[in-house]
Amino acid sequence: MNRRKFINLISATGAAATIARVPSTLAAADSGVNAPLPSTPLAKGTPAVFAATENGFTVSIPLAAPALVWIEYGETPQLGAIARADSFGFVPHDDVVVKISIRNLKSGARYYWRSVTRPALPYIGNLDAATLGSPEEIRSKIYTTKTLSPRAPETRFSIWNDTHDHHETIRALHAARKDDDDFLLRNGDMSNNVNDRDLLASLYVCPPGVDLADGPPVLVTRGNHDVRGLWANKMSDYVEYPDGPHPWYAFRTGPVGIIALDTGEDKPDDHRSFRGVAAFEPLIREQASWLEEIVRRPDLRDAPYRVVICHIPLRWIDETPPDYAGKGFDRFSLRARLAWHDALVRWGAQVVLSGHTHRHAWLPPAREFPYGQLVGGGPRMERATLIRVHASPERLNLQMARLQDGAPLQDLNFKPLAKVA
Image (cartoon, rainbow, N blue to C red; front, side, top):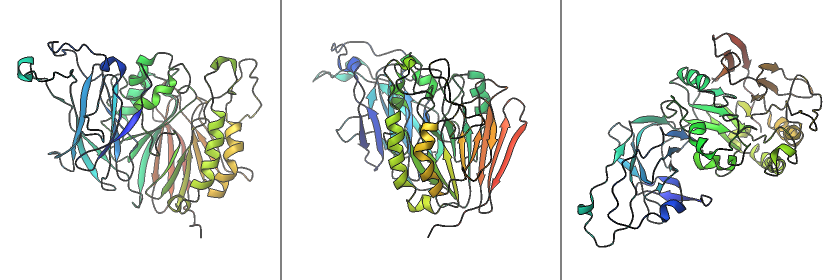
């Protein structure tokens, strides 16, 4: 199948959407107009909401068959608005996945929505469509999603690290979700590797037994296992990032400025295990240039609290150089730290939240490293953690607990920073 290219959609209500182009399998579909209507389910699983911003969010719908897809949405359960037309005159359609981004929404407002799918059928010319049967429209249940509010006095969110496609852990984390969270951040290593492209939907959109859309919107950072494998480059077909096509971004939620970074792999790009696929060191350098500019953005520059999120830690307990020629790998990313450290210090970063090591740890701020480093997460219940963040005008509170029994592991508080003149 050809590489999917994404285009912007604008609906009659001003909503925007992003979809994959028509895949080769659909374009080459049987042109016989008397083909029976599809009887297989159209959706491959439940949808998920990604990349919530102040004025919108993106719905990802994995598909099991060629389908037309659109979103009905509104500020009440009666809905009333539709995102269904692209700027080239098509209703979004695909046979693998469709992403629809709804824009021009109100800040900090709750919206109701549902996805609608219908079989995508060949062109029939002047024949009477009524004689060929009427395809059924299938509507999902009605979900609710709240946009972010940069000006709110408080914000709450949760972080999952290193679930590694471990279904029991994912189900337990999802069962512990909070209705008042503004978002959930999945901080990398959702997968083990992506050599099998058929796993993409269940890894990132619809894990078995979990309806991610039934909860806060999801933000994502990539871990080293998410970028590992022949089809890891297809993750972006299913997942959306707030700042567009690259997997790093920055935003304000209530009093917290957040910079989410992509640490790439845990070994050099030329390591034999990657077989020529890895090119993450240039991305680390590109993010360094981006950081120099983004930390000057007023909403981030003046944020009372300043948090960095990345999968591989920037600091670790034991920083002995790894033996890459043997079985060594990075417990922390020295490459990323050397590239980003100065900009993060100038910004006033207070804490970096990471996973990767499958071992929880807290490294407090020090003279050389004025930002603290909190690490947690693991695929199995006994190692898995749940991080909850609550920021108010008085303090930024981070609580990390063991998932298996709820035992507290860390309870950290940070004071608000002064605005930069």
